[in-house]
Amino acid sequence: MNFGQSLLGLLKTSIFVFGVFFISSSAISEDVLSVDTLFRQVREQIDSSPSSALVTIQKLKERSLQFDDKQRDEFYLLSASALGMTGQQKARIELVLSYVKNVRDPNLISKFSYELSDAYVAIGEYENALVELNKSISVLERLTDVDSKVSTLQGAIRLANSLNGFDESLRFAERMLAIATAENRLAAKCYGLANIVEINFLMANSEGVQSKQKDAVAACDLSERKVISLFVKSIVAVDLINSGRNDDGIRAGLPLLYALIKSNGSSDYLVQLEEALARAYIRRNDLPNAERFGLRAFQRAKKENSVQMLERTSETMASLKRAQGQLNSAIDYYDINLALKKKVLDDQLQKNLAYQRVKFDSQDKANQLTLLEQKNKILTVEKQLQYGKNQNLVLLTTLITVLVAILGAWLMRTWRQKNLFRYSAQMDGLTQVSNRAHFIACCNLIFKRADQQVSLVLFDMDNFKKINDTFGHASGDWVLKNVCAAIQKTLRKNDVFGRLGGEEFGLCLVDLTDDEVLACAERWRAVVEEINTTDCGYQFSISASFGAASRGKHGLQSFEETLAAADKALYVSKNNGRNRVSVYE
Image 1 (cartoon, rainbow, N blue to C red):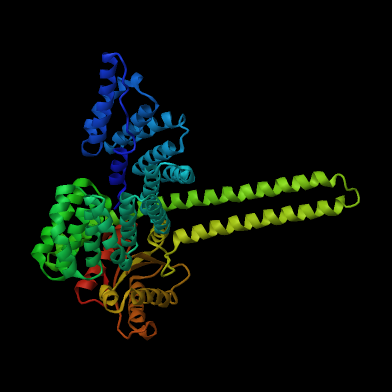
Image 2 (cartoon, one colour):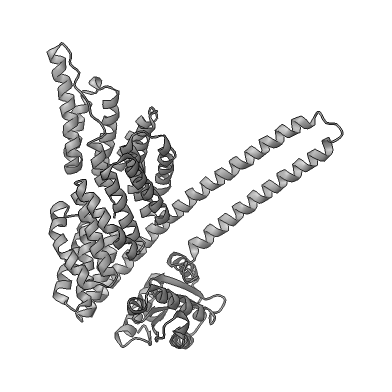
């Protein structure tokens, strides 16, 4: 979710105001008025009908010789925006790059940087997007136009959210609120508070969502940003359902559906609200309503080709079909969901890698600059030492020692940063086992060796949602950490253990017979069941369901085929009463 496009439309209709030059020649006056009229038409069309805006922009281009400097700047900004909204991202980038090199005003630079960053995100060039983001943020303090400051921060928030950089997003949103307060801009306050609500929602911080939502809605209503107010209300309704407050979520969400369809029928907010309502109705065992909303959400996501929404809605539809007893349909949706999960995770991995590389490069350049400054100081001292014959050797030795120490410290810091990046990119932060991307990469390498017996074991914690809802998420986190720690103690050196998402885990085993794999799975099932939860502050029983599959059995060859087979075996364990091991047959 993101409020960037709405804010961009607001800014583009308010930033540039042009007067008519009163010239004695009536023919020239009519031409100037025609240019102003065309600009006004583009501003009105840019959000409602971008393709129409492009037609009007072409008419303006034919009168470009009549432009003054401000009109020329606005022409390129509006052209870039219209190209972006019609999906012509490469043409948008070429247009901006051809013009921005001649721009000196920081306010304009920030706007063009936003256009470039947004276009690079759309085509998946995340490193270039981050570079442009850094440029716009670097000139933020020099901006004099409040709308330029707000649009710069909005672009930064949008990009940081897409990269899961929520701490940075919150800092940008707080800066936007500070600007809104200092400049008494109610619209900026609406966007700042709405962003904070959205960021807390993306972080699964329900308390943060609920504590800020009333202020956000009030600010947006007062500033007549009704659409943004509607988006905030839909976030709050989905958050209620995510928190297990199904009845409250349904009461809040149902009245919003018509308003969302009327304002923007293709909005991700609408898809997400319908999907959440479907989940709420599944929990209430109201399967007809669950199917109505779940199928509608899935079809909207499919129509808009929204991969993240398709991944979420396909999982909900699989749960619904399982609840209806339509197991074949459930498996079909699970297969769709599995493929989409891989695509979403691969895309997020690329984003995260780009984010870490740009961040590391920035730190590395800062370290190099510090080192150069130290070298300059040393050279200055060396020149002064030419005048001191007796102390020359001692001081020179001291300088060399200082230089070696600085170089050593810098190299050590760089080495540590690289190792930290490598570790964080491979490990799950909560359980300290491999994350999904690293687990899949390791498994693919193992499966490339055709001479090895390879097996996959998947397990999923039973009734884990109930643990979170009853004893709190802290208890749920305690369970996941202790389950992983207990199983890790039993693993061999070459076994691969990873968290695939939520409460689902996978193990890759080599050189074991089918009976040995089954024995390992049974031992891990018993280990999980024997965990004493008293240390987390509550006493309750836990268990896990396991599914196993081996390469070479029933025609399984690739990692993907074996993983899907193990997942189906896990589903059999779940369907047959949980807390058991099933082998793919």
